Length: 483
Image (cartoon, rainbow, N blue to C red; front, side):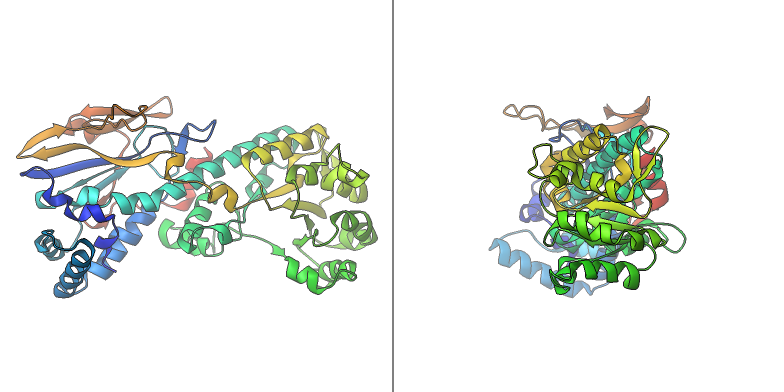
């Protein structure tokens, strides 16, 4: 598809709606409001992919390198079919094709940076006067590509903060947190691109994912190298079909075969609630204790239904002693472990647990807190973070919007802004040219600056006239997120 059609329908004729003599449109992309309590900074991520994939790859392959006649014929057909009789024209499309590149500048803060609400992450403007219409033409494609990875990177960082905090309080293995938040979201995301981009955002804070294609995504677009660096990984694990095929009566034998024959070494995660989780924990595992302890590796017990907090930590109102104790305490009863220097119990290294269903930020906090109250280290359990966390968000979660704040008409600069009288202030935009300053480690917006001042500050050119100017690496972005 011609990438000039990757836009909202109303964009195609804005060129004729600007004032006569318009030569420049300067816009910014900003998170304007947080709808998640306690979050007032957003992690910036995804722009480099947007530039490489769409502004360079797609435009070169499906626009500039296609015959002009073919491009114009298909563009005209689509617009005419879509709008009916119109005067959108084709000359501006022909002129762009003749130019051979997108005459744009994109400036941005570093990917991985934490950006306060109402501080622009990106600015964008045209470098050739006749293509002033391109700037906001890109609003739709930029927005639909960027808001979700920024959301996911921000939420993943919140999980990381929670898990780091409790590991610091209760665990002797704070490095385990790299694996403690595991991405299980792929099947629940809105298509493959969303799944891959969200998982890449998750991997800025963690190393565990079951979304395999995100590894290639990060190698292709973010200079990762999985041959030399740990980009992302997982472990051998069963699913319900495997356990069911072994039959209910043969479940203990299925466990034994898995841990002694199929996976005699290494980590293996076994789904354990296909029928009776409590029977697994009070009958099968005690019977297999010697086999578990004889392995060179860890058997990970995976419950997958019920209230995660109660299942892992126990429910004081439970009907049975097993329900009251919960998974971690029951595993301690069987396998024991050590009490670390902070006074918290850590399970024997041959056994562990993971819960990968219905985890939220609040439940992650509750699990860690209740384990702490029971005297257990938070790192006794891995949390699978799924699509409920990463898919149940929108562009409005952090109020992302791209708005023009400056333009030039007949050689005269115009500081423009938006401030609806009927709004609560969320939609009020910056005004004029923009500069971002770093003050005491926090990004601050300064608007209504001169071009001289605009060239200074923390916004850096990442794209100009068809070429990527700054090529960031996953390693550096991760450092920025974790700093």
